[in-house]
Image (cartoon, rainbow, N blue to C red; front, top):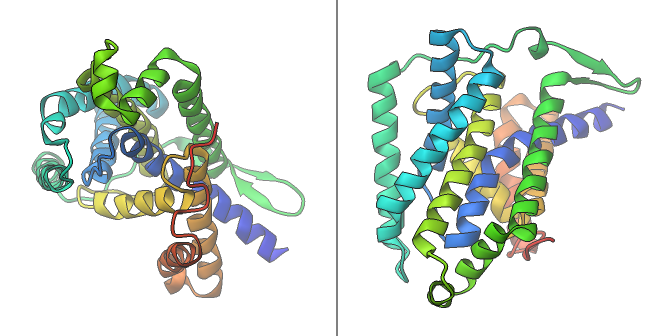
Length: 287
């Protein structure tokens, strides 16, 4: 029973990692762009939510809804005016630009909010739990996991069931041909990054509610996001959710043996998957 409880808690934790990774998977799947600032953008969204909560007294969920269009606009402008200029056969320029952006965001947040750890308070929901008989699960981790499933489902519907999704796929397959068909690749890429930051805002809400955060924690969240995307398989949104769950379960099992092994166990699971499935668990997009 302890093992079952540990696995369940790990799966729920994996939902948070899937939220970290979903936006990254969207951008990489469409543009083949590795955004090294993704974790810092999540942290920036968390500070935006915290600012709205503390200055206006808003409910954190309402604050996240208000922050979403703001983060979409930031993502759209960032991609349209900066990152589109770096796209091409050479992968080094996007890496250098997003690495520089990561440093700028971290230092900007340090100057604005200081290095103190912060947290987004959600009230009694943080300690509420559900007794399932054989185990007890927290309401907050459950909401996080269900949000991850909802985000993955929404991204799949957008990607495979809408005209915007067809434009995403066409531009990803052949940018030049898509342009000849009347699609504006630069605008499509900008929309994709905007959507990725909307997802990042959802991840930021749960990041801030479940753990302390400060301006320097972004790179650690980026590592979890990368590992989840690669474990799941590039191009698969549901694979990203599975990848997050693999990391979460590995960390939960490691922590049950020795609390010091929690983070290490997740990285070992990542390496083990790469050893046996170098292309990930689900390397093709899932419809």
